[in-house]
Length: 291
Image (cartoon, rainbow, N blue to C red):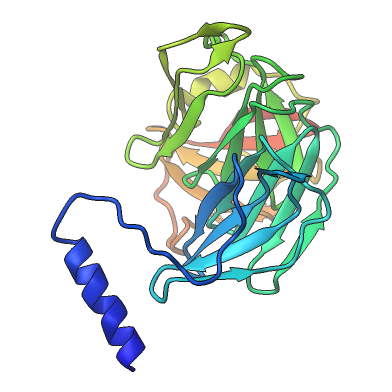
């Protein structure tokens, strides 16, 4: 009990000033560069994976409990990584690591890593950056040595990477700053480099709700939704990996993993009569169908 009180007092003093505080935990990871951190919100732990030590790329996984100022070494990953990309998927409560075509997923609750081995996958090595789009439950990857200027999205639910063709491209090919703005529902990119040139550009990659009509221009082998129009439910063919439903304003109504949409929104309420769009991902492509 005394230990917990002392920690609370430290945090109270920390809140009084804008400052950095050296926590000096008794046990901690060894020195390294490029050790990436993500926050696992379900477990309330900071997860560190990989990085480059004096011995080379690291297999190590560590978790940090800020409330008690304790680092704990977890299970090693199946592959060592440095200069990699790392994100936390809050929908599935998993940490996702990527480097050189390898996609690995970490479950803190079971302390296990899994090599997902999706195909196809980005070829990018060092310098690729990822951001987790919580609105669409999708990981967005940009650039990297070996895959410069490429944009990919990863769906953990189906273990599938999909390359996205965009009309415009940032000047930088790798080592960009990349994050997701949940308020504006957009991935934001800043800076980066191409060879010896450094960039100060700001780019935005909006969610699919923004300009959803653009997806209708992407071709996919013929799909038929039936009945269309429908009264109570409609059936979606099996040749898809993910289906999202939007209203005419581009607002996300629901995501479904089965073959049937019963006309309900994400809260289980029946939607109003009107026009809706189904965005269907499958076979590495996207199609939008009007209902």
